[in-house]
Length: 124
Image (cartoon, rainbow, N blue to C red; front, top):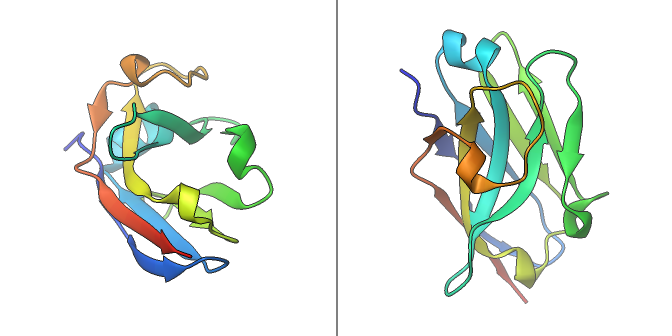
């Protein structure tokens, strides 16, 4: 199984927190660079965060720095996105994606496999 499977979305008030999970096979988890993207209605899909497969380097879009944290759990073959201090503008469908090159990219076109997405709604 290569396709990631997301979970953990939901409805939360502004200032609240959610943790998204992205589960995949051990092979995928250990070989692929993993990223999170989001897409709001009427907008293009945008990069949120990513983590390398080797040294654990992490990357974030400016608007989520200091609020979101990406991490990998090697025992569970799962990537997490901890989202704190959520804002209404964070509302979107969040997607987990896998990239078959261990190098950073914030372009959706550079990712090879995608999950089905999980809805995050932040109320004001």
